Image (cartoon, rainbow, N blue to C red):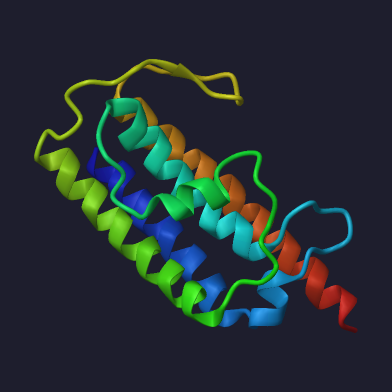
Length: 156
């Protein structure tokens, strides 16, 4: 699993870089052809990791439920995000990755409720969830990059 945790840390670094290098205005802008924004895509990865790894293993979330309720699948982007929340999200990107690794090493995920993702993959244990989560976060990283390119194109 070391490789999968390494991949997770790298995706999170990439997401953090977009979060930190994109203006607040651009983070909130919904580009033409999209139904969400860069900020939502990044926050959604944090919320989904908690659902896939903690909720389905019967464990408490490691973040405030606000993040889950506001950025889970099916939610719409909040366009009135304060800069302090952007800073908090940056912290969560790094910390929830570290906490997941520690919890995994501490055998925190003994139980797991099988789940079929909307992507069509069956998750049977925490290892499946971590591997799928990496794929999911990479997908949203791609969306965030595409949205940023769309926004930059719109500004010229």
